[in-house]
Figure 1 (cartoon, rainbow, N blue to C red):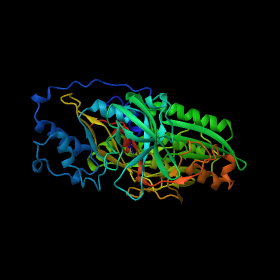
Figure 2: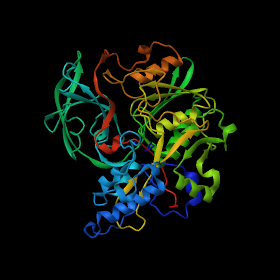
Figure 3: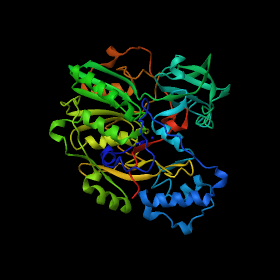
Figure 4: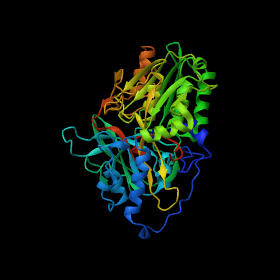
Length: 480
């Protein structure tokens, strides 16, 4: 999703001046919605909407100087297509800007409110010799309170058919998009997927994501190891995140593993909070630079006049539950570790060892904020890239398709999947054995033999495409 949202410092300074709609929630829990009054679209021409889009992008878009002049664009295009047509080197330089026909839907997405079953899944080939053949969807995680959890589904369950249709390489990315789904399950044994004749029919509901999947503390090799699996940076769960670290601190945690393999981003302010909770010697760093943001020339000039250089800098803030004593942190990563998740890694690198276990990250060092029409003439919500972010050393070199490279490369393809937090789980056990090389079998909750499957796609997918976005965003300041 950097679904990686931005900096609250500027918002505090400008909160009385804001014209554009806020993304106030943050995801799940304390979301606030504003109804958008929209004119009948038949009374508004595409040209009117598109002129507004171009003008707005000229003010905020990070690559505004690379946009075509409005006179050289086709103002009669559908606004959704028009937005894409003016993006800079779309798909390569700008891989991330997007538009939604409903600003309220967009704001809900960013705040973790979606109509879903509540699962993320990894796609495996049923037959390695047939890359275009059948696919098994293996559940990576299940959200708390979701229809999937209430039906008893869990990490490691295997789906082989949907609505009596076999899952294949051609349909696996779309087969879960209906609102009501009949799921057919299977098992994996002796290096083969087979049906077990079990079925469930579930209907998606609008759900507020709880991004904290699990947290626990291990006694491992004489260390107290804290483990957190966290899937989205939502400000509405900031206090829950603080509470997790309060438990870690009370139990004397002196090694930390943060599982971000399924975290596609979220609010920048929540990523900054997690940085404050982890960083070593926070007391000595309070009010010193954590990260810096770069905007386009127009917006930079405006912010400088309003607030000076402080408009671009986020400083460390005191957090009572900062662990304080960590020399290093382990981060479990995948190709889906994106945006705000990568921001955490980059924020911490100047101050402590950050040890990555898994696969390379997504590669998104830029973020956005939501822009809507302040005159309520139409419902479109824009999410253009508006800033680039660097750490205290001005480092921001992970914005490529390879992102951050892992210290230990591990493919999350060992079946059957262990539950997140099980010391025998594939990525977690690698991190634990760096902390202390203990034979993990003695700590395993299962003695089932391990088998290696073949992933057709390294990144996990959701039952709603909104779950697969990679975003880092902040609150929208006033128009320059």
